[in-house]
Length: 349
Image (cartoon, rainbow, N blue to C red):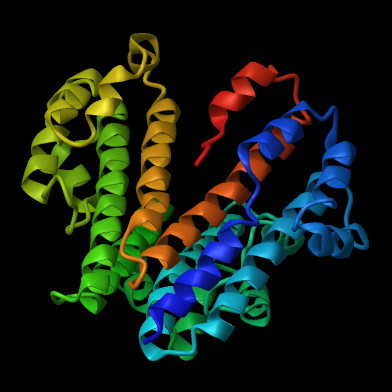
């Protein structure tokens, strides 16, 4: 496996990501149209031109970003023609299969139009546009799950298992949790062993599981969910906290107490979140810091062994972060949000 070649290609692609100055310039632009015009001067040029022929405003930017993301990772697959590398890339992209299925289920649940749902999909995984379009045409949740099962798509398994509970209590969160749990457990199983590449991927997956579990714990405490019921939503395989520790957190009465218990871990940075935000139970503020930490951990992989999967992991997170930053900027162009506050919403890597 010529990881040296792949590493060189990934570093070349990384050099074309938008730097801090470019992002700051995008922040200063007065409106959506000027943002679209400026993005046309960047590596997003072809995607913006394609999008302009179909959409305007935020819809134009969203379409261009989705198209660019999909095109980028299809390109990586073409020069990583090796079973090991393809497996790792597919593992990363599976999360978009999960996210797309969640988006379709949520859309159907709130009776959104197919066009509205389509605008939120990113067909970067194994489920292509045609497959996602057919899923959107299904009339309800059960029909979507049945079609996935008919196609023998692996994500049907957890959904089928949890559907009786969903039908009984109507909590879409049960289905979403089942997808997350299945994805992480399946991903971890596929990278077992002492191999350095598998170890690196296991590490970042385990941090992701920590982040998902911390979010779950804090939301359950905020909403005063019974600890025994809440414990069902925890996912095994975290790096810092096992299920026993997390279950103990669920018995705490306040978010402040939970953050204090986490202060002796790698997540001690959460203790620096403003007391006002914690007292107001602003989970979104805490989630933003967790997301920032996850991105920094992922992009930090660029400094790993150049003859390993490190550059793939690093680029994946850097590209994901770049697109997230552009989406945040575009959304704030339609509000009166202060520029100084907007900068705080971005993650610079």
